[in-house]
Amino acid sequence: MTVVDESGTVPIPGAMVVVHWSDVEERPRRETVGSEGRFLLCAPPGATEVVLWAELGDDSSEQAIVALAPGEAREVALRVLLSRVRRGRLIGRVYDAMTENPVATAAISVVGHTGVSESNRQGQFILGDVRHGVHQLEVRRIGYAPLRYPIEVTRGVTTEVDIGLVPMPVEMEPIVATVARLRRLEIKGFYERKYWGELTGNGYFFSPEYIERWRPSDVRFLMVSNVPGITWKGANRRMSSGFSRLTCRMKFFLDGFEWPGWPRIPGSQLAGVEVYKGPATLPAEFGGSDARCGAVVIWTK
Image (tube, rainbow, N blue to C red; front, side, top):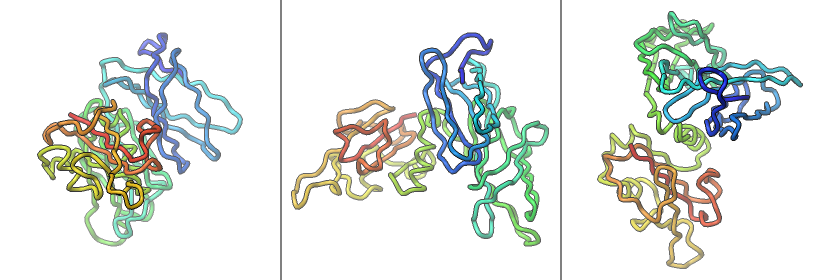
């Protein structure tokens, strides 16, 4: 796989490639391409399709959907549209509005848009390269009432959609909830870690919407009020040794860089916060030999 500029001739090193297997129960991940703009991707067992796109700062490539076959090697070129992001992306989940179970093989499309996505076994889907503006989102699945819902797509922004389909012939209104992700947090992997962290119970995550509702005076007040065992001095009581009164000092990160102690960030400047209370739950980028007490990861607007 190669990441290149719009002309298709100049490699772009350091770009981030987002990998999403459509039919395998494996979390989406981000990989950084090498100095020659190339990246080798090996498919997990059972994978037949992968969705790829590249990101570089606020710029991104168009989405590529690649069909896979056992023993076959594919060469894919992702063209980054530098400073010319014209399209948006929809990503989300389809579920049964009565049971809240995921709905697989639902067809998701935007009226007037050529692409069609199909939800996987977890009900998840991605629909990329959608023109900005207000569109009609259409969802169809045998056994459920068809849904058509107005949705706004923003340039260079991924809009997350939760779609509750109503089984036929039950009469009730469909359920749709949308939220536009902050592009900065998405590029940094916040939403991906939040999704899987909440699914597995690893970590505490405070989204922009939560912070807006809570309106904390500063980041310390948000943490101490919402995460058990964290002190005002940035220590983790839960990781203290035996009966010692000494508490365990956590690591701190501000916008991806390690920080010596609590950053003095007012609540109005917070975009998102992640808290990991032990080494077993820490993502690799926030780990290390000095991270046995956990870490607080702070993102600003």
